[in-house]
Image 1 (cartoon, rainbow, N blue to C red):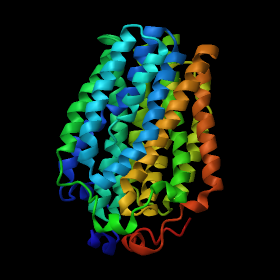
Image 2: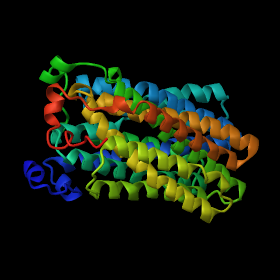
Image 3: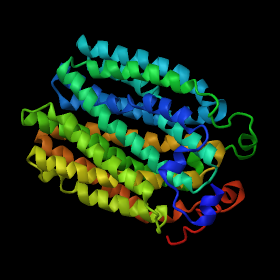
Image 4: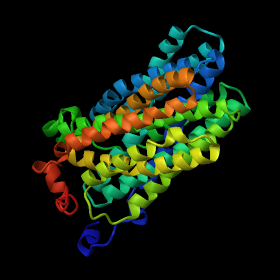
Length: 422
């Protein structure tokens, strides 16, 4: 990795994937995060089927998202302190039981409050595999220029799951049974989570390590992490608003099976952009790319409500997806430079939790709008969410300056110091 810096060559995916031990956590990690992309849409489709209301379906999904947003950072903090395996094993067991309980309650016509009660532990126990994989990359790369490539690779992996997951969940719910998507999510979480937890050798240091003793702090105490968390609420508003609005749109035109395909196109745009971001030798810093990404995302989201055909909506969804990855990758690249190693997993989970919280709010509001004003009204949610996030970033951009003292600054030599173009 030192030779890459010295020679000025652009680090790429090939070099990243040759990192020692990478494949031992990448493959199980991919299996373990796949169900996450199925959870919200599985709940929406099941509850809408049993209650006939997108508002109720969105509300149950929102409770799950809020619960995850509140508990995910605590899960990350515990993983930093006690190790990922200690958090994952009980988490996947609770999630599986809770998901099955939610399914049974929905199918038996339980009141809405009972669905909310089951949704709380379902969301709280969602395994934070994505942040854990990112923490493993950060621990192994130790500030290498490949960290930006790793962030791009993880975004591509996340978005590939969001291409496959919603399509799979929709196919199961519409072609097999309305509950099949949520049942499959619970089963995959159990199998994938336990498999990932078994990979002990690549776990980051935790507990009584030197970093933990000397730098133990809360990630949320860092101003830049708070700014990024607020900005990532906007990303969540896109995911949640698109899921509910696309579902309502395809129902409205009598083609519910097209929902998975449309959401897959949106996620495919995200994935393609992620691949590109990881292969470009950027001459601008991640802060500027973050702002530009949100500006493009806001502009693209502003025309979603005008689509009145599957073809046009698919094309617009693809364009919106193209701006998601640059924003996500820039944020994850920045956060590694803002916090000490002892708070790394917690920091990543704050961002993931913010996405979930934004998604939860979006599915609730978009569901109510779709019930009251029609499917097109729900597309206002991504626009408002990304616009507010953009204003936040522009106003508080100075707080995203990487740490310049101590251990983290030393790790940044070679790839963070040149980022003065911002």
